Amino acid sequence: KKAPWKTYAWVANRDNPLSSSIGTLKISGNNLVLLGQSNNTVWSTNLTRGNARSQVIAELLPNGNFVIRHSNNKDSSGFLWQSFDFPTDTLLPEMKLGYDLKTRRNRFLTSWKGSDDPSSGNFVYKLDIRRGLPEFILINQFLNQRVETQRSGPWNGMEFSGIPEVQGLNYMVYNYTENSEEIAYSFYMTNQSIYSRLTVSELTLDRLTWIPPSRDWSLFWTLPTDVCDPLYLCGSYSYCDLITSPNCNCIRGFVPKNPQQWDLRDGTQGCVRTTQMSCGRDRFLRLNNMNLPDTKTATVDRTMDVKKCEERCLSDCNCTSFAIADVRNGGLGCVFWTGELVAIRKFAVGGQDLY
Image (cartoon, rainbow, N blue to C red; front, side, top):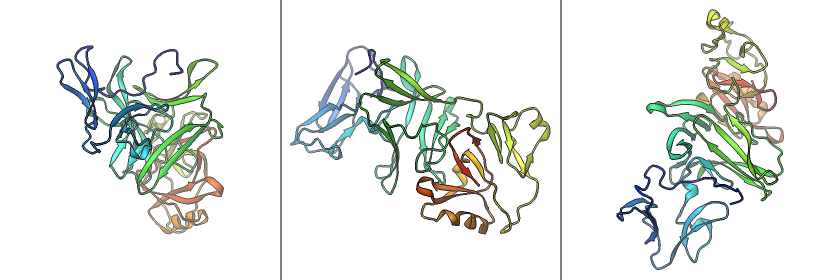
């Protein structure tokens, strides 16, 4: 409502539009229902529970959450339904993105099909909990294919290792919850005159911030930004670095798997070891400012003393790498990888140590 033009954050019936400009939005029993010109149901909240003896109301809250609740219960835990559980393409402050383990609902963002067409587009930003360590993945679903184009990296207690969020901002706080009830990310604003949103479009994931003096949305960051952002640009046991030429670099102790292809600036086949692993007698190289490898083959122990990480990895002949799980307060817990390390990049600043 602060913007001089409309900013669309949610569309109820994005994939089932009205056939004409005539429609009716009404409460029917415990449900909010959108009816078409011929009184057909176009969209509904489709609720089955509720107390029919208590009046049901629909309300748009100041934070942008459109809710259905009983008139005598304003507590969020008593909402019968809320739009925040069914995102479109935009994550607003106080909204949660991720998996509700109780309802089995994965709240994710889906791009618009076009600038004037809010129906579901090709790009989806969602939490993948099938990995050893959950990550948010930007997926291109064009022509029913599933191509991962970006990954957030795992949460390290302060940020996702592959997302350029700026820490230390006094007006924006990031939250990540992982427990028996949910695995979810959210953010909120401490300065109510500044607003922010996370939006997925066709091709990009954008953080936009509303700054009052300019009365406009400012692009805070966007992904992809540079040549190192595409996943798997550099193959296994190699990493992408913007300041080197070529951008793909073998980890020390590895050489290009296909030297000719590597010389032609194609690093997709990655690198191979120059010597075989010697289980129990190997040592680890520290790589600074890294976006951690893809976590498909990772496991995590969140309670382990970080001093034990190397010892634990050395004792497992299948362990190829490790990192600290939570970098706050000197570090706690360990992330372990087995198998090949893929989708690694080096940042000029940020990221974390990988061993």
